[in-house]
Length: 213
Image (cartoon, rainbow, N blue to C red):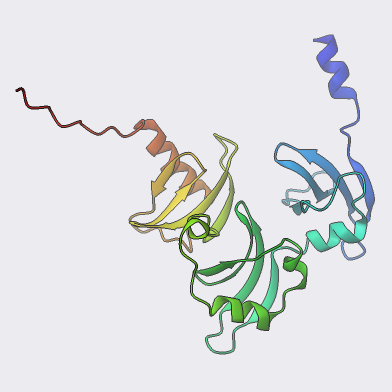
């Protein structure tokens, strides 16, 4: 117990980067369960959810700057609105990589750096192309990212499957049903569906009986 208390009393290892000129909040870099990331430090007692963003694969915890961090925290980045239908176009970084999204349509980007550089016109041109099939289609970007499942501590996303939309934490899948839709389902509701599915255990199929000769 004494050793545990000693470890907990040590600094968390946060690397201060500076202050966000817009919010006045300190920005720090730290190493988390899913890798290095940057985040803002909230005022004591604040109930807000701090903005956080994972570092690009080309960045490192030791060299990331305040400018880098502020650009990362701008993601998801709203590129603008499609004049033809009024839908918003957004650049996001997801579990399966960077992508652009408009409504239920999404297309993967070739690099994370494109998230900070792609224009509305370029995104619309990419979204106008047909989806690629095969392996890349299997790793298509999710429809929505909901957050972390409180039970498994894994990221929960909404995906479109062969039999309709579903939520998944990467290991358990649960079909979206009833009054829920991919656009309005919450993390709490998704976690309920996943917990219900996990409680049923893995699905089993009966093997056909062999005919005796």
